[in-house]
Image 1 (cartoon, rainbow, N blue to C red):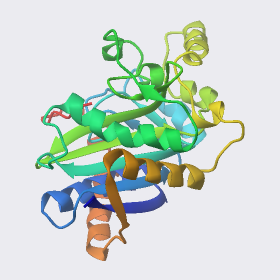
Image 2: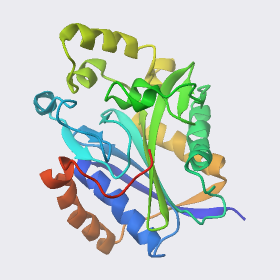
Image 3: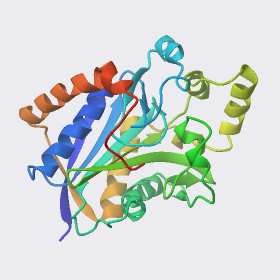
Image 4: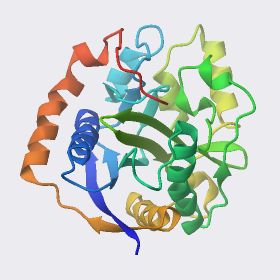
Length: 279
């Protein structure tokens, strides 16, 4: 018999609420109130999420973000900044002790990323897993989509989806970005560079490093089309059955309370972190 997970389709929410709801679901699963969860969501308005330890000063162009109406939020997970705009975002919440979850972070990435791989197959896209040959991810640009990490999805060698993971209260939270389209002008206007020439070189190089779904399909697909494909992909890739879950009032109220943290400058601009997430 297949394992049954809850499926949460929360639609388009604000950046702060998106991060808050992930944390609330993690808390409920940790307390044994709900089984593992797959959640799909979008961003309204567009957001830029920064890694748990990432600096804002000197890396993020806050004036540029304000011009575009892009809201900044700090994630629970590590890694670099991600622009969440025209994309499908997923989160997986599952116990570290789940029988199908490896103990190591890298191997857990592989298991969970099988759902992404099958989602791309459902769309007729030949994607594969990244196996980095170097450590360039650890330095250089503040932009997440500059380089793929272990077992992230690539298409023809270009990064197609980015993920990050943390573990808290005995529970794995992995969430990630599946871009349908990438606005490269907006993306690079959200980061600071030494000068215009460096910025332009980075923008041109980006075309060789990252790709979105609608770049490789003969006709563009919608958010709902992508959602349906990746839902099937996760069911097949993780060999699970997804049961639609309507969020209880108490859980929503908990998320709304947590949202205050994700809106606060204390959280979004704090320099020192005591917890160590895994990106």
